[in-house]
Image (cartoon, rainbow, N blue to C red; front, side, top):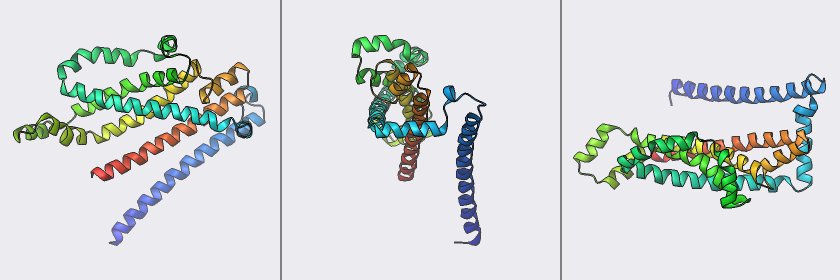
Amino acid sequence: MSPEQKKYLKNIKITKFKIIFWQIFLLLLFFILWEVLVHYGIISSFIYSSPSRIIKTIIELINDNNFFIHVYITLKEVIISFLLGISLGFLIAIILYEWKTLAKILDPYLTMLNSLPKVALGPLIIIISGANIKSVIVMALLINLIVSVITIYNGFLQTDEYRLKLFKTMKANRWQTLTKLVIPSSYQTIISSFKLGIAQSLVGVIMGEFLVSKMGIGYLIVYGKQVFNLDLVMSGIILLAIISYILYKLIVILEKRLLKHTN
């Protein structure tokens, strides 16, 4: 390896280190300022809680054996709804791509469903599915499915026209074109739909837990609001932020492995 290559790789490592350092620094600065502002009464500790009180609340949840069950329930609902949304979204996107007329017919309905506030369907979902985990998963599925369909379908449409013509010239059938060209060309878009899907699934699950659940982080937030325990509410929000970050990083790791495998 030449000195220039070594210097280039070293600069990349330094840049990554700087990025991680500033990310951690800004996060710590935020929590320190939050704690200081609460400590000196500049902001209300009752409304905004504080990092130390949030840590204390989480420790209490762990000691009461409530922490892991609520986190487990929320993660379970997110993963189920995410896998269903991605699987159905991928399948529907293929159907729409292969049958362009059907895609044109359904286009206004997909747009309408995507813009419809899903929480408005909450009462109907509860009546149909019951006040249980099914309603939570259905709510999350409704939120992430349409986004997955639209994202993956648009990725299929971005396939290079010259390559499509080349496949036609070589007399490739529709299945060969789809599996050998269209889908591989859309890997980046499909991974992007994973990132959107996991985020939308988490949003949908929390909305569902707000409505019907008796377990989960969304339930903790609602319960904390009802009993004016704002420490519990803020703890739930912080836990959601942590879970969201972890899920996102897992998708990023998956993205790197898939792209490395395909390249």
